Amino acid sequence: MTDTTVRPTTGEDQSLRAGKTSQDRRGTGTAAESRGRTTIADSVVEKIAAIAAREVPGIHSLGAGMARTFGAVRDRVPGGRPDVARGVKVEVGERQAAVDLDVVIEYGMPIIDVAGDARSNVISAVERMTGLEVVEVNIAVDDVHLPDEEDEQEETPNRVT
Image (cartoon, rainbow, N blue to C red):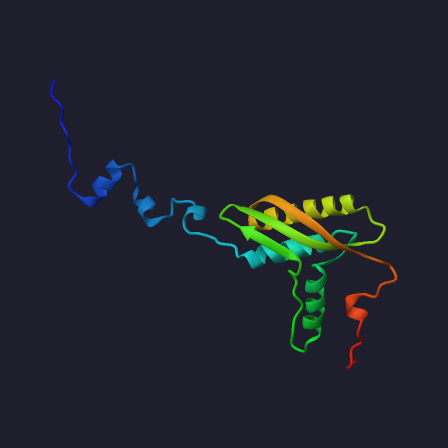
């Protein structure tokens, strides 16, 4: 018995022999997810995490003492805009993210429960919006907001109404 090998001579014949169709060469048969790369900046994940944490009842504000002080000053500067992600640090990889939160809790709220709710809300929001797996959310409770303390925004009244 003899073996025969057939060698196509045109480029299209070679692509058909390799199992490709003419559609594959144009890319229409390829999934959209494999046609490019999406990168998500750390600042995007920080904003998502900050908003999700602030939604939790019992979270008064985000940021450690000095960050809150500088942030309050920066918020009052004309033309300045509030730092939404104050108190949030993230590390973002290709498929995973880690989040660190500095929070101030309302007095009387169970800290462990509020921290757990914040952790769950942040994980849910980041994973849903970015598709990244959140491997950890570390929460540092830096202060407790007492009911008789003035809010940072009320400390100095606006000069212009």
